[in-house]
Length: 134
Image (cartoon, rainbow, N blue to C red):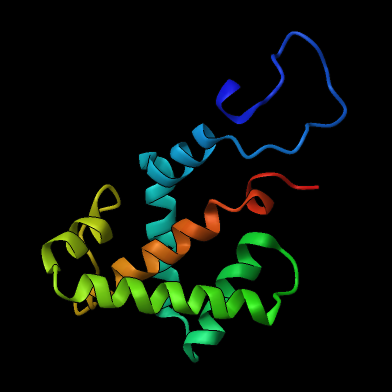
C-alpha cells in the first residue's frame, strides 16, 4: 500500500490524497495483474463494432465511467497507431505482449492488433482517474 501512498491500516481516513509516485506507475505498467487486465480490455475492444474512435471511446468510458473528451481519443489514437507501427516488425514481441499472462489469442485474431490494444488499455488503466475515484 505504501507504493500507492495509501495510509496504513491502523487508522481510518476519510479521504486519500492524490498521488502519482513513480513506483505507482511502475506497478501499474508492469505488474502481471495489470498487464492481464489490459490484455482483457484490449481483447474486448477488438470484438467491438465500429471505428477506431468508437472503440477508444468505449474503452475510456468503461474504465473511467464518464463521458469521453475528443482530445483524449486523439491521444489514444496516436498511441494505438504508434504501437501498431512498432509491433508490425516484431511479431514475436507482439505475441508475447498479447498473450503473456492471459493466454493464447483467439483463433483468427491479428496478434499485432491485440498487442497494440494491450498497450492502449495499459495506458488507460494507468490513469490516476482510473485508479482513484473522486
